[in-house]
Image (tube, rainbow, N blue to C red):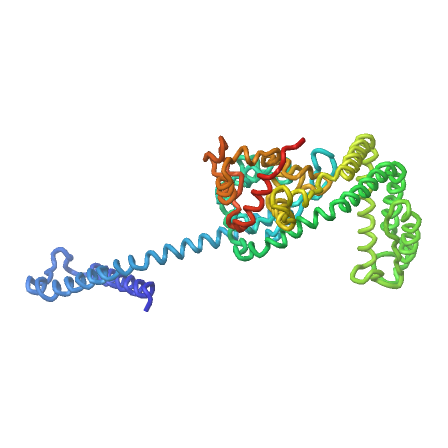
Length: 474
């Protein structure tokens, strides 16, 4: 018998005893007697001092015995009950945190499972809309503690798509909601073994980005040219779209005709819309509707009326967008042209290029593989903060270790900040602590994560040697 059931039975016994005493006290209170109760003869002294008293004392002793057993048993089970409550509260907090994660769209940037993703952002230097790399957060507790994570949630990250989420930083979440969100983040953390298994994939991805950077920038240049063309052609497209919205709307609202396939559109309307869509398709780059008056679903799974309404909705959106482009044509054209010049200059300068052989000879006694791995680790784990523009893409990336959210590490800074190599190793393993000094005159702010849980010391040493071996810029 478990303690909870036993305590329940004891409680029922006590309640029964109290009910018994209450019944004795009220016994006979409802009867009508000739002699008032206070004048009637009560039990004799012998009865009071023997049977009645014995019964009363026996019940009292029984109740006291039950309490003597019940209280220690209740105490013994108290720790388990408290632990169960803590577990229950944690589970409820995780559920609330999951709801917040979904409600505020955290997964739209960081991935549904927190494995990383991307966000749209206008890059500050160029004014170009870019796809900003959002980091994985299913491993964040291996780099930061809870208070540091709370800081980033409250204040966000300036000059990036990451907004402030805490009330103190101007966001929508109170402290309790932040607690719940942090509990949910902790809930979906991957194991450390999984994180360590990702090292090679992360390095290879970072090195592949260097190899493909020129192609990526060329692709962005093509998109920017297309944007400029779209801005220039907007004034000629707008009247066509405005007329198309009017024509399609009128055809949908037509009241008389034959509807052979009973799809909500008259046969003549389907023929006219199909023909009209073909006449404007080339000018607007829109689809041609091939509606069949004898088929309810010209496109399987969608009724013809739904197809036409969707088409009209696209035209209406285009009308709004083209109107904005036409109204602000000069401004948009200047920005797009400036962005194109930025991209073309980036392609010409190729600041992402790294001379692996030079690094190998200067730092690793000619070991080319060590040089490649060191750069791969730095770009995979450090560049997001310590290389300007890295998260925005290859075109916006400045020289490696040029600084961003974190300080620049070029020009021998690593050797200036840390005279001893082992001090730098210790700092990168543990990260910074708010208010705690590091290196020469450094004061931590808690923003530099520790990498001891996600990288072996051998890889950390490779990166440190790479940074300490950097020659000052000319």
